[in-house]
Image 1 (tube, rainbow, N blue to C red):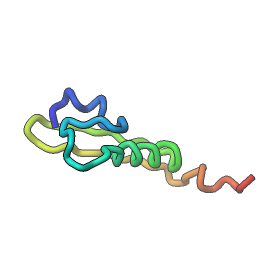
Image 2: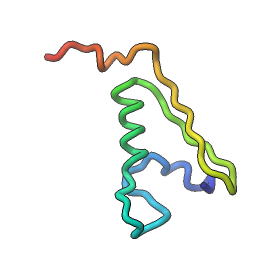
Image 3: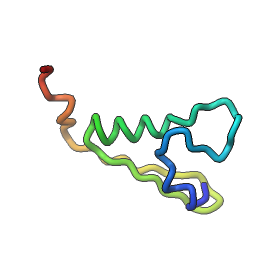
Image 4: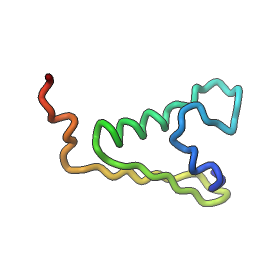
Length: 70
């Protein structure tokens, strides 16, 4: 993955391969779950000519899952 694509890695519907049968929302959903639901963070890195790697950091407790229903 070229480093110029990293800023859009987690944006919905962004692709460099149009018309190949995917909606391109998978990483957007992962980012939302990790950051909003679990209270963590996810970072993408890439080396030219290689695939991306992702670092996911999660807190010991996911506070949004512990909140009682209102």
